[in-house]
Image (cartoon, rainbow, N blue to C red; front, side, top):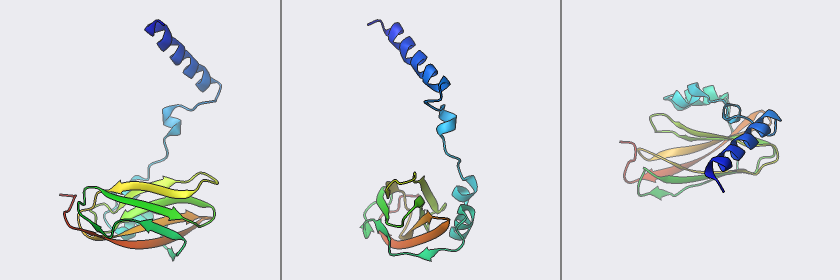
Length: 151
């Protein structure tokens, strides 16, 4: 098949889908970025900018991370929330220069599970903050770093 024809068909099909409202443009798909929370240099400021000044400790949140990470440049972290109606999960590495590392929005009815890799400069507590039904819950796990990854 002619490559020009193939490209034309792909683009016209996508334009038709956007026009019909079946697809959203890239700008519409992008979530709102909480710049203030991600630029906070203190944990308290990051929590305040997330809208989570009062946290409730919860045993329904599980943080899966190594007890000792050999290289702080790549630390695997997974968070599972068994709290009903989980709306978002944020991960904070308390001693990083910018503590808030990530925030994940959870769609209605989706499983409260996220997995990512963090860069950590030193041994620190990793805090998961879960928003569910307008309340904020937390769990903490210490991760020891042998070789720092932030510098």
